[in-house]
Each structure stands twice: as structure tokens, then as C-alpha cells.
Figure 1 (cartoon, one colour):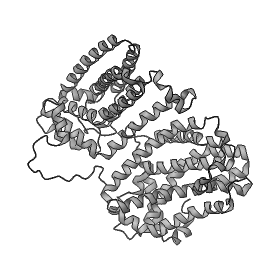
Figure 2 (cartoon, one colour):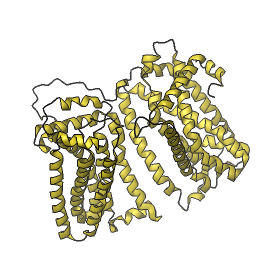
Figure 3 (cartoon, helix red, strand yellow):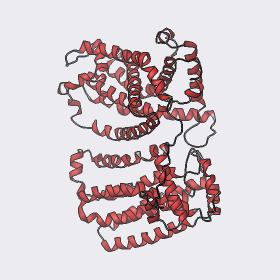
Figure 4 (cartoon, one colour):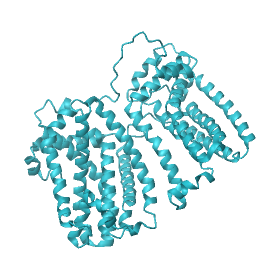
Length: 555
């Protein structure tokens, strides 16, 4: 279907036969790509079920984003809000989920030596992403399409898919323009790091929108929105797209409606033409310098008489560990978690998920956020926030043992390590110090600001309880050396059952803490018991032998 306007692609400077061949190979590889979770080998019927599940998820998301259409009376203003949400989510998904297609460095090994021009390469990437987007956009926009047809009739429903194509063109242009800007500013080898942090921020924004947008549109005053109160909206491309509804008779209160509706068509097409015609050569030259290795470049620094432990992480390794094996595990985990992009991408968003979900729970009584915040100190909600901090360590533990380069773990077995548990305990302490401790301290400052000095004992007890819980998780479910297992390793039923059982621990600890909320003597007893149990669990984890590890892997 995308090859139907071949004359247009040829006028942009693309070779039609080469373009068709590249797209065929890219789409074939997409169909053969293994699933991200579970076993590597999946039957075709399993893939079909996963596709149906993804379509259902996108339909649910579309049901959330169509809320302005059902609540806001002004049709052009409601469409402006809808297209703003849709354009934002499409852009974020394009960056977070498909940047590897926009910047597939394999081209420099396969296609660059061939007589393929830059415009053909860039157009192939853009059309590939265009196809990928429509696989997402169609189910995501279907609820709004049906809603417009039901509320406004067939004319609005007929106009909607035309404007939707323009939305996709704008998303492609915005993402490519941002990437090109970053490539011109940053060095190619640093580009993936910059995009990685942008992906982390985008994931947090996406998570917040799913939880907080329904609460925003549940307000009693949402239907009273008047576009005249927001005159700046006329400069937004989403308003230009919504202004197209003036063609079928919907009133628009802002001046210049006819001009903006024409601009809604001209601007996306002009953006696509400029991107392919003039920016494509610069684009290809820049991405050719991007390396495909998933770890950041490491340039060894010549030692100038530095003693062992002179660096910050080395000082921490010696401070928190008594044996050399544990110190080695600490330093390996500390350095690898800093250099692995995939680890950062998976763990860092958790820091934003916890406060977003906490504020989402605060507004469940249909009060404003300011009212909920003012009454926060009268409720023991700080216990919920303290125990939710365990998800940071759980997320870090889940990916501490996984790596794309897991075969490099042979070095563990080539060294005279008698007790591998020492290395695992050192790695556990590294992520505990590096990720959990700063995050918990930040939460503690917030809790002390809201609840005052009475919450000090609660913070101390929760700190020990959460550490106890995640140490139990590590002891039972993560008996592996750091970065030594494949990401799609088979998960045995026994291990899943143990993980499920151990998830009961934070609930028991949290309820026990709640019942002892106003009894200091009981808190002191719980603190002593938890501290003793934590010492026993960590000692057992540190004494894990090679035989215990083999048994754990078999389970």
C-alpha cells in the first residue's frame, strides 16, 4: 500500500526498486522478531494472541484519550485536546519503542557499500516507521473515530482518517527533527546516551498520563472549557488539525480559521518534503558514526600512582564489604549498571512511577490535588509511600543478573572463587547503595516535611523492613552472578511460585507496622526482630555455594 504513490517517492529522489526491496526485508524481519518476554521460541499462534492483546491495550488507551470528545462541548477545542494527546503519545512511542529502526546502524554494513542513495535510505526508514505507527494508531484512534461518528454523524467520521494521516506525518517530522538536532549538537558516540535519557523521561510522562489524565477530565468544570480563554492555542499544530472541522460547518471562535485549516494540510506535507529532500544527506552521514554496541564506550585512564580504593565507588566497596570477593562484586555491579543502557532504561523510570502512583491514590476520593495534599498529614499514608520504595530495588534486582553479553560471565568461573555468594552480596549492596538508599532518603525528607518528627521511627522501621524484603527476594529468586544470564532465560514454575510467596512478605511487614503505628515499644520489638532476620538472610545469601546456584538455576 505504501508503494502505491511510487511517482511521489521517485520525485523525492528515491530508487523505487531499491525502496521496495528494503521495505520487504524490514517487514519480514519484523514478523520474525521474537517476543520480548518468555521463551525465545514461540509458535505462530502465540504471536497472534500477543498481537490481539496489544490491539486491546491500544484500544483501552484510545478510550482514555477520547475523553475530551465526550466531555468538552466545543468540538474544535475538544479535538484540539485529543490531537494534542495523540500526537504527544505517538511521538513518545516512536522515540521509546522504535528508535532502533530510525537509527539502525546495520545499514552501514549492509546498504552503505551498495549503490543506494541517502534519500532512498531515509525514505525507507520513514515508511517503515509509518507502517509501524499505523499498526498502533488505528486501534488507538478507533474509539475516537466511533465517538465522532456517533455524536457528529458521517461527515465528521469521514474527515477523521484524513486528518489522522496528517497527524502521523507531523509525528515523523518532529521525531526526525529532534534526532537530527541532537546529532548536530552531540557527538555520534554520545547520541544513544542522550536518547536513552529522553526515553526514560518519556516513559515517566507516558505512565503519568495514563494514571492522571482520567482524573483531570473527571473534573466538574471540564465541560465549561472555552477556547477564547486560551488564545495561544492557535499556534499549536493540533489546533490547525482541529480547525479542519470548520469545513463541515462546526463553529470556530478564534479568528483566522480558514488559514489555519489550510495550514493543517500544507504544513505536514511540507515538513515531509523538506525532511526527505534536504535533511536526508546530513542524516545518513551522522548516523554512520553511531556504534551498535549497547554499552557505553570506556576509555581506560592511565593510573598515576592511585592506591586501591581511591575512587568513590571503591571507597564504598571497602566500606560496605569485608571480603575481596564481595568488593569485586560491588565494583562490577556499580560500573556495569552505569555503562549498560538497557539497565538504565528499565530501572530509572521506576523512580518516577512511585510518586506518580502515590499521587494517583491520593486523588481517588474525587478531591482536588491541593485538598488531598493539605489533609495528607492527618492520614498514615506515609507508610504506603515508604513500602512502595521497595519497587526500586525489585526492579534493579530483576535486571541485575541479566545481560545481552551474558557469555562474558565465564570470567567468574575462571577465577578461584570458593563462595560465589560473596560476589552476589557485593552486587546486591552496590544497587542498594546506588539506587535504593538515595531514593529512600529523598522520600524520607518529603515525609518529615509533611508528617514531622513523629514519622522518624516509622522511617527507620520501614527502612529495615524493605531491606529485609528485597534481601529475601534476592536470596530466593535471584541466586545468579551479576550480568551472567540471558534476558529470555526460562523461568521455572518452582521459582515463580517462590517469587509469588515472597511477595506476601511486604504485605505482612506493612500491616504489622500499621498496627504498631502508635505503639513505640512494639515498633522497637519489630525493629529488633527485623534487624536480626535481615542479618541471617544476608549471611545465608553470602554463603551461597556453587551447588546452591546450580540448584537455583534448575528451579
